[in-house]
Image (cartoon, rainbow over all chains, first blue to last red; front, side):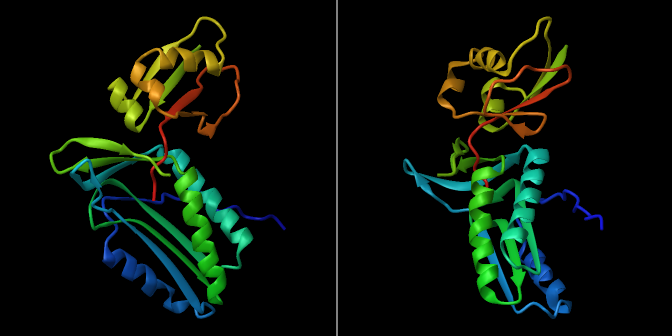
Length: 149
Length: 79
């Protein structure tokens, strides 16, 4: 039997990820009754203090074609490693203010341990492998470039 | 041959452009191109740069081909 490969999807959302979007995403899973556990991670833009200046927003940009391919590959690998029912990755592009959500990852499985472990794994993969760039904007409109450590 | 250079994040800011197409009359390797790239501004030398050829990250020297697209990527900051 020929195995159908999933297509590369666009994982980017322009601007912040709304609580409405997240809520709807949870609601969509009510029909999948083999799921017993959802694990969600939300990344929020932090108002860091750097040299006495406060970060008010991060302006995200990306090599989108590569980043979507990286998300796709991370997805495939995560499905291979963990027994999941479904998984979703959404990342912001453009300006996200401090306090707003910039990353939403969602894994569902029959039992909780698989979903928990999958989320841990895929956040680390996203942070280290996705070509996404972040300009931290300060209150006085100056900026610096964020680097994941 | 013609190749397209794409710049992202801080690199695009330093060079004040997102992309450019250059014509090469001789065969050039990726590392030759990287040297020419780094010579564009001293500021580029303080950035840890990843390079992708046709959307694949490359960590060794390769010869460039006509119509290759080279992406110059600064450190990743997603999540």
